[in-house]
Length: 458
Image 1 (cartoon, rainbow, N blue to C red):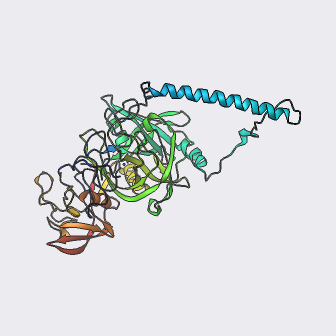
Image 2: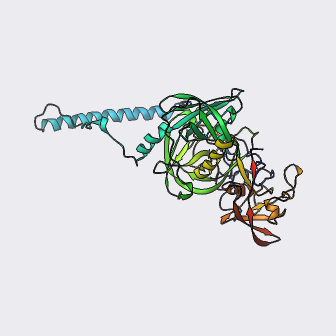
Image 3: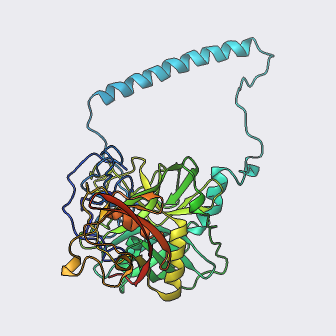
């Protein structure tokens, strides 16, 4: 499924594992599943199981932080008051009722004082004792937020053209590396300006260490990083269960240090998303879905579990419409369908970016269609740019796969489209062996494939 992206359809899949081929954009349909996508990749991955799940994706996908371009860093503006009418009469009624209640309350208070113990105060208020000593347990939402906020930063990125915006990131290690989304920092990657501001207001210049457009993951590093950095603890996203508590931290619409809560709504959602500029390629993930409120500006921020461990990077949202929120920012807000890159995958990508500065993608060496309704990931008759659909001597060729084969399962994971296959392959590493189930001439077959690799974004 694709996520809404400021009215921009999901671009063709990256020329990577496998190499998808452009397909006609899917017709507009009611929103189904986000800062990533799920329940059927919008504009690409649509379920082919009877058409009832996931439902057809909307025509336009989008990042939770917006990702570059005019809209993604728009600052929050107070909505203009609605025109008058019945509101004035209602207000007057409320004031009148308050006055009546006040009069009655006064009478009752006087009566109680007259019948009391003779005290002259008549006060019924109770003050909290030692409010300064009030403490929150570590396991509470307040306790988790208090610990995580100092390690979460608001990122400001500005390109050479002056365009950019605000996103989020979090401390990855004590050396000053910050983990975030590629679409948050992409504008500043080539000579732009990049900074990170902590919850205490301290601001540091930063630089991009590496970015992976296909995974939508990036690593930046603080310049003159402080010595007291506290990295957030990374959890195990493979052990997450539907219904687990989640806490999201970010800067929605520029409102830094915002904390929202929810649960894990679903796992392994196939998501395709783009940065909304209309010129970039799509990113693919097998995402964690959450109903914790995520909005433009949350991108790159941590999704925490009930113990305060990072289980994902907030990346995309599904929105009911492409209309703006208060102030005409032109960006849609949360409807409870947010998507995060599982931290196990993000950690693997981050380690590679810190080590070499470029991403490595696992590949099967075959081009698949992004078209829906094929009953799986169909290997096309021709590859991108007129190349062979199945790379000679590549993993798919060695396994005997041919154009026209429809891949329906990777290991035990059902595959309903090309984008779903891409997202699942990218949860693995080059050299991993996977079992592909496919149909050819109406017959189902199974074959083991050892994944190859491709370095860098093409």
